[in-house]
Image (cartoon, rainbow, N blue to C red; front, side, top):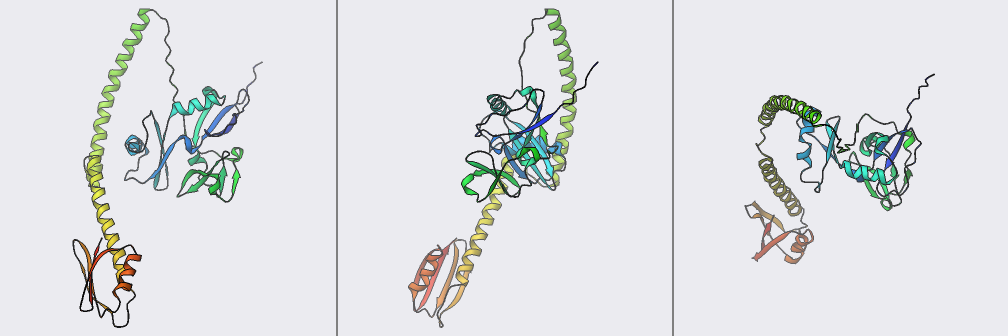
Amino acid sequence: MLTRFKTTFRTLFLDPLDTNTLYYEQGEKLRIILSPALYWVQKVQLPIQSIREVRKLLPSLFEDLLPEANYSYSVYRENDAFFIFAYEDAKIIELLQKKGVSIGDVAAVYFAQSELSNIQEAITINETQALYLQDSLVSIVPHDWVEKSRNLDVKNIKLSKHHVTLQHFKHLVENTTLVKVAVLSLIFIVILIVQLFMLSVELTKKEEATDALFSKYALQSTLFQNRSVLQKYTKIYNKQKSLREHLGVILHLQLDKNEKIASLQYTKQGLSFRVTGLTNQKRLLQQLAAKHIKYSASLHNNTLKVECTL
């Protein structure tokens, strides 16, 4: 008589600073929730609708942020934003093994970002750190930074569909006859040729779609060019912001009854203005210095001319 056994699952939280062993019973399959210390995450908005297309861009979206290593990537969509992830399979597998977990017992791996994004208060994860939700991102903060926190209870977490599978490569060499090796090699070559042909066709389609996307949104052809455009407009924004701040300080100067701003002019060098009927030059200039305004000033016949550098 055959007896059918139902596979049981246990959810465990994996954090590198948690010194406890991850206990589970034989036959249980594990669902591992990764601490933010084990992955990198960004919340981005892109002019793309397809998850598949975003997945192709993930290495470039992380290229300036990650230290040198071999990474896997994942993405899911929430409302009008994408949450993108980068993680090291080898680092996670090594930590699991140190905690006594066989990789064969791991059924799925989840990110704390997707499973704990609805927390209302900080959650303690080890002796010195806690999870904290800020700007829709689940982050690690020192435990001393939060006024109140609760312990993590993974049993009551309803897991989402956003999970990944760790890539564990095993290089096994079997002793076979030369004939079997040759046959397998030939089959592999045929499959590779077919895949290369299909990949070529698919790549052409992707390039056409990419060209259409860049044309639609008037993007430059390279990442370097797009960064240059961003730097250009960032510089313009910073200068305009500085201009508004300086104008605010000048227009709110505390003047005596007979003092008034006679002129205000914007030049390439900055802002210049004249104050007539001046009775106390020092008092006026102290107001500019208190607001950290860089200036040069000259006084002539009770008229103070001030030039401010943006």
